[in-house]
Image 1 (cartoon, rainbow, N blue to C red):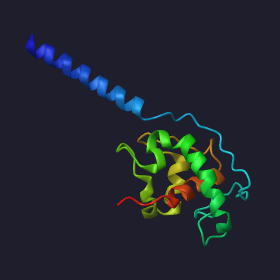
Image 2 (tube, helix red, strand yellow; image 1 turned 30 degrees about the vertical axis):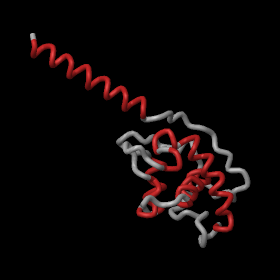
Image 3 (tube, rainbow, N blue to C red; image 1 turned 180 degrees about the vertical axis):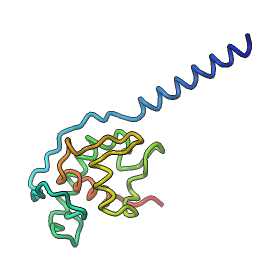
Image 4 (cartoon, rainbow, N blue to C red; image 1 turned 45 degrees about the horizontal axis):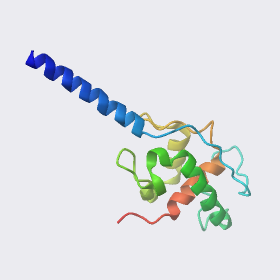
Length: 142
């Protein structure tokens, strides 16, 4: 009897923990992004952030940061944390400088096998690059 009770208790605890993690994953219902007056990037996927200062459209950097902040809050913060400060289940996105642009765009467009959805049918690359521009504008962790 004691063994049976312990197994049931263990199984129940495991289910509760799993349910908690699923619920903590956040709302990933895509939110529309108004890219406003950002220059249109077209359909061909770029492999370098055009909105980064010093790049081809770096003069749009401030606007991209503003658009990216809104896009991030509506689509990314539920899983990756407010101002990209991860709660531990996802990468700390403030460390994106270690990820090159091509890696970033590929991950966002295709999603991951660990739970991040593909955003290719939801966000255009203007919004995707604006999000990275916003995250890059945040102070890096100590």
